[in-house]
Length: 287
Image (cartoon, rainbow, N blue to C red; front, side):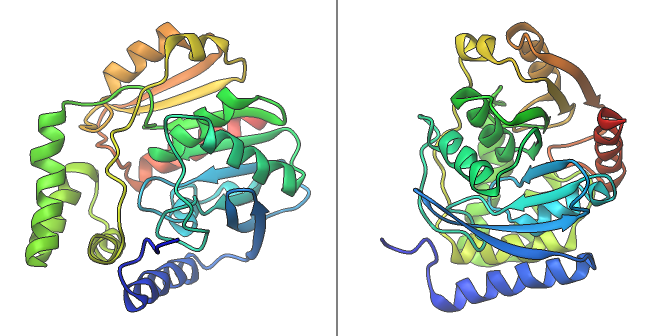
């Protein structure tokens, strides 16, 4: 299988940043590799083993340490399993999965089964939300409830806005290597500046073969079958997956929608204050 990394040097640079982010989190953790039929899956485990399990899923072009930062504080009330999604710039296998079938659902359930997790809570941001919804479509066994933040797979934004504000700056950076284009890209998606995101995505854009497959949306008939409680957090100023549009559709298609929250000042990627709100929402669910 041809590597998704353009060079060994580029891969090393990305994984060095992965390790640095994990170190900067200053948490106690352990790695665990899980073998699945789709390839080796790496997880970072933290928190108290006696607490309820929560599995967190990062977004596109991301990694488990980023998810751990996003959901910082969960380890006080949960045993946290942060998964490296396959075919992303991280430490899991580079096996490409399809968004059009149930690959992601099968894969995530294999991870849950190997870890022997029961009554697990799932939480995911952006592309991680698609992975979680695919898991619910595949089967709902062993999943207690899910928390989705600005998830893919529910609605899509204006494609022209995404083209000019997101994809063209990305392509210009790849061509020119001028950091101003990464900053322009991030300014459209991030609510607050993130120095690590600038550094990490600069390396990913140049050294990793990204997947530009259009993101599908869940069919109403599939959504109507879901029984697992869903908490949905949407961002009002999200150009990728617009928040108001998302909540409107979710209320129509999800019979198991338990709670919704619209982050009125948020772009696609939340700031640290909103991340704390989401973590507190998850705490409240177990109390």
